Amino acid sequence: MTVTDWMNSAFRADIACKEKSAAVLAVPFAQASQRLIATLQAGGQVLSCGNGGSSGDAQHLASELVNRFETTRRALPAIALGTDSSVVTAIANDACYEQIFARQIEALGRPGDCLVAFSTSGNSANVLAAVHTAQQRGMWVLALTGKEGGQLAPLLRPVDIELRVPEQNTARIQEVHLVLIHALCNGVDASFTNNAPAPALRTGQVLRDREALREACAFRRPLVFTNGVFDVLHRGHVQYLAEARAKGACLVVGVNSDASVRRLGKGADRPVNSEEDRMAVLAGLQAVDFVTVFDDDTPLKLIQHLQPDVLIKGGDWPVDRIVGADWVQARGGQVLSIPFRHERSTTALLQKIRESQP
Image (cartoon, rainbow, N blue to C red):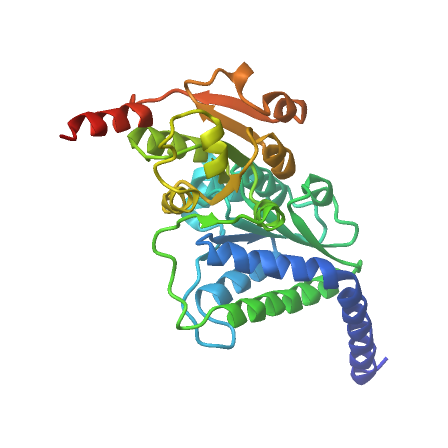
Protein backbone atom coordinates (compact mmCIF):
# COMPACT_ATOMS: atom_id res chain seq x y z
CA MET A 1 0.00 0.00 0.00
CA THR A 2 1.34 3.39 -0.97
CA VAL A 3 1.25 6.43 1.31
CA THR A 4 -1.55 7.85 -0.83
CA ASP A 5 -3.57 4.63 -0.56
CA TRP A 6 -3.10 4.56 3.21
CA MET A 7 -4.15 8.21 3.58
CA ASN A 8 -7.24 7.71 1.42
CA SER A 9 -8.24 4.62 3.41
CA ALA A 10 -7.72 6.40 6.73
CA PHE A 11 -9.67 9.42 5.49
CA ARG A 12 -12.66 7.30 4.44
CA ALA A 13 -12.65 5.47 7.78
CA ASP A 14 -12.41 8.78 9.63
CA ILE A 15 -15.39 10.23 7.73
CA ALA A 16 -17.45 7.08 8.42
CA CYS A 17 -16.58 7.26 12.12
CA LYS A 18 -17.60 10.92 12.38
CA GLU A 19 -20.89 10.35 10.53
CA LYS A 20 -21.79 7.45 12.82
CA SER A 21 -20.81 9.47 15.91
CA ALA A 22 -22.90 12.45 14.80
CA ALA A 23 -26.01 10.28 14.58
CA VAL A 24 -25.45 8.63 17.97
CA LEU A 25 -24.37 11.73 19.88
CA ALA A 26 -26.83 14.33 18.56
CA VAL A 27 -29.25 14.24 21.52
CA PRO A 28 -26.77 13.90 24.42
CA PHE A 29 -24.52 16.52 22.83
CA ALA A 30 -27.39 19.04 22.72
CA GLN A 31 -28.06 18.36 26.41
CA ALA A 32 -24.38 18.68 27.29
CA SER A 33 -24.01 21.96 25.39
CA GLN A 34 -27.09 23.49 27.04
CA ARG A 35 -26.02 22.43 30.51
CA LEU A 36 -22.41 23.58 30.09
CA ILE A 37 -23.62 27.01 29.01
CA ALA A 38 -26.08 27.15 31.92
CA THR A 39 -23.28 26.24 34.36
CA LEU A 40 -21.04 29.04 33.09
CA GLN A 41 -23.89 31.56 33.02
CA ALA A 42 -24.64 30.74 36.67
CA GLY A 43 -21.05 31.53 37.65
CA GLY A 44 -19.89 27.92 37.79
CA GLN A 45 -16.54 26.72 36.56
CA VAL A 46 -15.34 23.86 34.37
CA LEU A 47 -12.63 21.46 35.52
CA SER A 48 -11.27 19.02 32.94
CA CYS A 49 -9.00 16.00 33.18
CA GLY A 50 -7.61 13.11 31.15
CA ASN A 51 -4.59 10.82 30.88
CA GLY A 52 -2.10 10.45 28.07
CA GLY A 53 -3.44 11.86 24.81
CA SER A 54 -6.66 12.77 26.59
CA SER A 55 -4.74 15.16 28.84
CA GLY A 56 -4.23 17.25 25.70
CA ASP A 57 -8.00 17.26 25.15
CA ALA A 58 -8.54 18.47 28.71
CA GLN A 59 -6.04 21.29 28.20
CA HIS A 60 -7.51 22.17 24.81
CA LEU A 61 -11.02 22.60 26.24
CA ALA A 62 -9.83 24.72 29.16
CA SER A 63 -7.71 26.89 26.88
CA GLU A 64 -10.61 27.57 24.49
CA LEU A 65 -12.89 28.57 27.39
CA VAL A 66 -10.40 30.77 29.22
CA ASN A 67 -9.29 32.44 26.01
CA ARG A 68 -11.78 32.24 23.15
CA PHE A 69 -12.70 29.88 20.35
CA GLU A 70 -13.72 31.94 17.31
CA THR A 71 -15.50 35.02 18.60
CA THR A 72 -14.55 37.79 21.00
CA ARG A 73 -15.96 37.28 24.48
CA ARG A 74 -14.92 37.50 28.09
CA ALA A 75 -12.70 34.84 29.68
CA LEU A 76 -14.60 31.95 31.23
CA PRO A 77 -13.52 29.97 34.33
CA ALA A 78 -11.96 26.68 33.24
CA ILE A 79 -9.06 24.70 34.67
CA ALA A 80 -7.29 21.71 33.13
CA LEU A 81 -6.21 19.52 36.03
CA GLY A 82 -2.57 18.66 35.55
CA THR A 83 0.37 16.82 36.95
CA ASP A 84 2.98 19.53 37.49
CA SER A 85 6.03 18.59 39.51
CA SER A 86 4.76 19.99 42.81
CA VAL A 87 1.59 17.93 42.60
CA VAL A 88 3.37 14.75 41.46
CA THR A 89 5.99 14.87 44.20
CA ALA A 90 3.43 15.61 46.90
CA ILE A 91 1.14 12.79 45.79
CA ALA A 92 4.05 10.38 45.41
CA ASN A 93 5.11 11.05 48.99
CA ASP A 94 1.69 11.20 50.66
CA ALA A 95 -0.77 9.15 48.63
CA CYS A 96 -0.66 7.76 45.11
CA TYR A 97 -0.66 8.87 41.50
CA GLU A 98 -4.26 7.76 41.00
CA GLN A 99 -5.48 10.47 43.37
CA ILE A 100 -3.92 13.46 41.58
CA PHE A 101 -7.08 14.66 39.85
CA ALA A 102 -9.29 13.75 42.81
CA ARG A 103 -7.17 15.82 45.19
CA GLN A 104 -7.25 18.81 42.85
CA ILE A 105 -11.03 18.56 42.57
CA GLU A 106 -11.25 18.35 46.36
CA ALA A 107 -9.31 21.61 46.53
CA LEU A 108 -10.91 23.49 43.62
CA GLY A 109 -14.32 22.01 42.88
CA ARG A 110 -17.53 23.67 44.06
CA PRO A 111 -21.13 22.46 44.13
CA GLY A 112 -22.74 23.12 40.75
CA ASP A 113 -19.42 23.09 38.84
CA CYS A 114 -18.81 20.75 35.89
CA LEU A 115 -16.10 18.10 35.56
CA VAL A 116 -15.33 17.19 31.94
CA ALA A 117 -13.65 13.78 32.12
CA PHE A 118 -11.85 12.45 29.03
CA SER A 119 -11.14 8.72 28.81
CA THR A 120 -11.19 6.78 25.55
CA SER A 121 -11.41 3.45 27.38
CA GLY A 122 -13.35 4.60 30.43
CA ASN A 123 -10.89 2.73 32.64
CA SER A 124 -8.36 5.37 33.70
CA ALA A 125 -7.95 4.96 37.47
CA ASN A 126 -7.33 8.60 38.30
CA VAL A 127 -10.15 9.76 36.01
CA LEU A 128 -12.49 7.35 37.80
CA ALA A 129 -11.34 8.72 41.16
CA ALA A 130 -11.86 12.25 39.86
CA VAL A 131 -15.44 11.48 38.82
CA HIS A 132 -16.22 9.97 42.22
CA THR A 133 -14.83 13.01 44.06
CA ALA A 134 -16.64 15.46 41.79
CA GLN A 135 -19.95 13.72 42.44
CA GLN A 136 -19.35 13.84 46.18
CA ARG A 137 -18.76 17.61 45.94
CA GLY A 138 -22.08 18.22 44.21
CA MET A 139 -20.61 18.70 40.74
CA TRP A 140 -22.08 17.23 37.56
CA VAL A 141 -19.96 15.19 35.18
CA LEU A 142 -19.63 15.35 31.41
CA ALA A 143 -17.76 12.21 30.34
CA LEU A 144 -16.23 11.90 26.86
CA THR A 145 -15.51 8.21 26.31
CA GLY A 146 -15.36 5.56 23.59
CA LYS A 147 -15.53 1.81 23.07
CA GLU A 148 -17.99 0.39 25.66
CA GLY A 149 -17.59 3.18 28.20
CA GLY A 150 -15.47 0.99 30.48
CA GLN A 151 -15.77 1.34 34.25
CA LEU A 152 -16.68 5.00 33.92
CA ALA A 153 -20.10 4.58 32.30
CA PRO A 154 -21.72 2.73 35.27
CA LEU A 155 -20.48 5.43 37.68
CA LEU A 156 -22.51 8.13 35.97
CA ARG A 157 -25.75 9.25 37.57
CA PRO A 158 -28.92 10.34 35.75
CA VAL A 159 -27.78 13.96 36.19
CA ASP A 160 -24.46 13.27 34.45
CA ILE A 161 -23.97 13.07 30.67
CA GLU A 162 -21.83 10.68 28.64
CA LEU A 163 -20.71 11.39 25.07
CA ARG A 164 -19.52 7.94 24.02
CA VAL A 165 -17.93 7.63 20.58
CA PRO A 166 -19.13 4.38 18.93
CA GLU A 167 -15.63 3.34 17.87
CA GLN A 168 -12.91 0.95 19.06
CA ASN A 169 -9.92 2.73 17.52
CA THR A 170 -8.37 5.05 20.11
CA ALA A 171 -7.04 7.55 17.59
CA ARG A 172 -10.44 7.97 15.97
CA ILE A 173 -12.14 8.33 19.35
CA GLN A 174 -9.76 11.17 20.19
CA GLU A 175 -10.42 12.79 16.80
CA VAL A 176 -14.15 12.83 17.53
CA HIS A 177 -13.46 14.16 21.02
CA LEU A 178 -11.65 17.08 19.39
CA VAL A 179 -14.66 17.73 17.16
CA LEU A 180 -16.92 17.65 20.23
CA ILE A 181 -14.66 20.12 22.07
CA HIS A 182 -14.87 22.56 19.19
CA ALA A 183 -18.64 22.13 18.89
CA LEU A 184 -19.10 22.76 22.63
CA CYS A 185 -16.90 25.85 22.47
CA ASN A 186 -18.81 27.12 19.45
CA GLY A 187 -22.03 26.93 21.47
CA VAL A 188 -20.38 28.74 24.38
CA ASP A 189 -19.10 31.46 22.03
CA ALA A 190 -22.63 32.00 20.73
CA SER A 191 -23.94 32.50 24.28
CA PHE A 192 -21.29 34.91 25.59
CA THR A 193 -20.25 38.22 24.10
CA ASN A 194 -18.23 41.20 25.22
CA ASN A 195 -21.50 42.68 26.42
CA ALA A 196 -22.11 39.80 28.84
CA PRO A 197 -20.38 40.71 32.14
CA ALA A 198 -19.19 38.08 34.57
CA PRO A 199 -21.71 37.42 37.34
CA ALA A 200 -20.34 39.43 40.27
CA LEU A 201 -22.40 38.02 43.13
CA ARG A 202 -24.45 34.95 42.47
CA THR A 203 -28.08 35.51 43.41
CA GLY A 204 -31.15 33.37 43.14
CA GLN A 205 -33.92 33.23 40.59
CA VAL A 206 -37.67 33.34 41.13
CA LEU A 207 -39.45 30.57 39.22
CA ARG A 208 -43.18 30.08 39.65
CA ASP A 209 -43.40 27.48 36.86
CA ARG A 210 -42.77 24.15 38.58
CA GLU A 211 -41.74 22.33 35.41
CA ALA A 212 -39.19 25.01 34.61
CA LEU A 213 -37.96 24.85 38.20
CA ARG A 214 -37.55 21.07 38.13
CA GLU A 215 -35.65 21.29 34.84
CA ALA A 216 -33.38 24.02 36.20
CA CYS A 217 -32.55 21.88 39.25
CA ALA A 218 -32.14 18.60 37.38
CA PHE A 219 -28.33 18.53 37.35
CA ARG A 220 -27.74 20.47 40.57
CA ARG A 221 -27.40 17.62 43.02
CA PRO A 222 -27.56 17.17 45.95
CA LEU A 223 -30.70 19.34 45.83
CA VAL A 224 -31.71 21.01 49.11
CA PHE A 225 -35.25 22.22 49.81
CA THR A 226 -36.68 24.33 52.60
CA ASN A 227 -39.83 26.37 53.00
CA GLY A 228 -41.47 29.04 55.11
CA VAL A 229 -43.27 32.37 55.19
CA PHE A 230 -40.15 34.58 55.42
CA ASP A 231 -42.36 37.62 55.99
CA VAL A 232 -39.78 39.92 57.58
CA LEU A 233 -36.31 38.55 56.90
CA HIS A 234 -34.00 38.57 59.93
CA ARG A 235 -30.56 37.34 60.92
CA GLY A 236 -31.83 33.92 61.98
CA HIS A 237 -33.27 33.35 58.51
CA VAL A 238 -30.05 34.35 56.78
CA GLN A 239 -27.90 32.08 58.95
CA TYR A 240 -30.24 29.11 58.59
CA LEU A 241 -30.44 29.48 54.79
CA ALA A 242 -26.64 29.70 54.50
CA GLU A 243 -26.26 26.49 56.51
CA ALA A 244 -28.95 24.80 54.40
CA ARG A 245 -27.16 25.72 51.17
CA ALA A 246 -23.94 24.21 52.50
CA LYS A 247 -25.65 20.80 52.62
CA GLY A 248 -25.84 20.48 48.84
CA ALA A 249 -25.25 21.94 45.38
CA CYS A 250 -28.50 23.89 45.08
CA LEU A 251 -31.00 25.42 47.50
CA VAL A 252 -34.66 25.87 46.56
CA VAL A 253 -36.83 27.90 48.93
CA GLY A 254 -40.60 27.36 48.82
CA VAL A 255 -42.54 30.41 50.02
CA ASN A 256 -46.11 30.34 51.35
CA SER A 257 -48.43 32.33 49.11
CA ASP A 258 -50.29 35.27 50.66
CA ALA A 259 -53.47 33.18 50.84
CA SER A 260 -51.58 30.31 52.46
CA VAL A 261 -50.13 32.65 55.11
CA ARG A 262 -53.59 33.97 55.98
CA ARG A 263 -54.81 30.42 56.50
CA LEU A 264 -51.97 29.81 58.97
CA GLY A 265 -53.65 32.21 61.41
CA LYS A 266 -50.63 34.41 62.03
CA GLY A 267 -52.80 37.51 62.33
CA ALA A 268 -55.13 39.68 60.30
CA ASP A 269 -52.28 41.90 59.12
CA ARG A 270 -50.07 39.04 57.91
CA PRO A 271 -48.27 38.76 55.67
CA VAL A 272 -46.79 42.22 56.04
CA ASN A 273 -44.94 41.78 52.74
CA SER A 274 -46.52 40.33 49.61
CA GLU A 275 -45.39 37.01 48.18
CA GLU A 276 -43.73 38.86 45.28
CA ASP A 277 -41.68 40.98 47.68
CA ARG A 278 -40.83 38.07 49.94
CA MET A 279 -39.59 35.98 47.02
CA ALA A 280 -37.56 38.87 45.57
CA VAL A 281 -35.77 39.46 48.88
CA LEU A 282 -34.93 35.76 49.28
CA ALA A 283 -33.66 35.57 45.68
CA GLY A 284 -31.19 38.34 46.52
CA LEU A 285 -29.39 36.17 49.07
CA GLN A 286 -26.16 34.51 47.98
CA ALA A 287 -27.19 31.24 49.64
CA VAL A 288 -30.41 30.88 47.62
CA ASP A 289 -30.45 29.42 44.11
CA PHE A 290 -34.18 29.33 43.34
CA VAL A 291 -37.33 30.64 44.98
CA THR A 292 -40.85 29.46 44.22
CA VAL A 293 -44.29 29.77 45.79
CA PHE A 294 -46.89 27.24 46.93
CA ASP A 295 -50.54 27.89 47.67
CA ASP A 296 -51.35 24.69 49.58
CA ASP A 297 -51.35 24.52 53.35
CA THR A 298 -48.14 22.46 53.16
CA PRO A 299 -45.35 22.15 50.58
CA LEU A 300 -45.75 18.35 50.22
CA LYS A 301 -46.81 18.41 46.55
CA LEU A 302 -43.93 20.74 45.72
CA ILE A 303 -41.47 18.47 47.55
CA GLN A 304 -42.74 15.43 45.66
CA HIS A 305 -42.42 17.29 42.37
CA LEU A 306 -38.85 18.46 42.94
CA GLN A 307 -37.62 15.27 44.67
CA PRO A 308 -34.96 16.94 46.85
CA ASP A 309 -32.05 14.98 48.27
CA VAL A 310 -32.03 17.03 51.48
CA LEU A 311 -35.09 18.48 53.25
CA ILE A 312 -34.40 21.13 55.89
CA LYS A 313 -36.33 23.24 58.39
CA GLY A 314 -35.28 25.53 61.22
CA GLY A 315 -34.51 24.30 64.71
CA ASP A 316 -38.05 24.87 65.97
CA TRP A 317 -39.18 21.94 63.79
CA PRO A 318 -38.34 18.42 65.06
CA VAL A 319 -37.52 16.09 62.19
CA ASP A 320 -40.58 13.91 62.82
CA ARG A 321 -42.86 16.94 62.32
CA ILE A 322 -41.30 18.23 59.10
CA VAL A 323 -43.76 17.92 56.22
CA GLY A 324 -42.44 15.51 53.59
CA ALA A 325 -39.85 13.94 55.89
CA ASP A 326 -41.14 10.39 55.49
CA TRP A 327 -41.33 10.76 51.72
CA VAL A 328 -37.77 12.11 51.37
CA GLN A 329 -36.33 9.50 53.74
CA ALA A 330 -38.09 6.70 51.85
CA ARG A 331 -36.17 7.79 48.74
CA GLY A 332 -32.86 7.67 50.62
CA GLY A 333 -32.67 11.41 51.29
CA GLN A 334 -31.75 13.35 54.42
CA VAL A 335 -34.07 15.36 56.65
CA LEU A 336 -32.41 17.91 58.93
CA SER A 337 -33.49 20.43 61.56
CA ILE A 338 -30.90 23.21 61.74
CA PRO A 339 -30.71 24.93 65.13
CA PHE A 340 -31.00 28.71 65.17
CA ARG A 341 -27.69 30.36 66.08
CA HIS A 342 -29.42 33.71 66.55
CA GLU A 343 -32.78 33.67 68.29
CA ARG A 344 -35.01 35.94 66.25
CA SER A 345 -38.76 35.94 65.58
CA THR A 346 -40.76 37.80 62.94
CA THR A 347 -43.78 37.85 65.27
CA ALA A 348 -41.69 39.29 68.12
CA LEU A 349 -40.11 41.82 65.79
CA LEU A 350 -43.48 43.03 64.54
CA GLN A 351 -44.77 43.26 68.11
CA LYS A 352 -41.76 45.41 69.03
CA ILE A 353 -42.48 47.72 66.08
CA ARG A 354 -46.15 48.05 67.07
CA GLU A 355 -45.26 48.82 70.68
CA SER A 356 -42.80 51.50 69.62
CA GLN A 357 -45.46 53.41 67.68
CA PRO A 358 -47.12 56.31 69.59
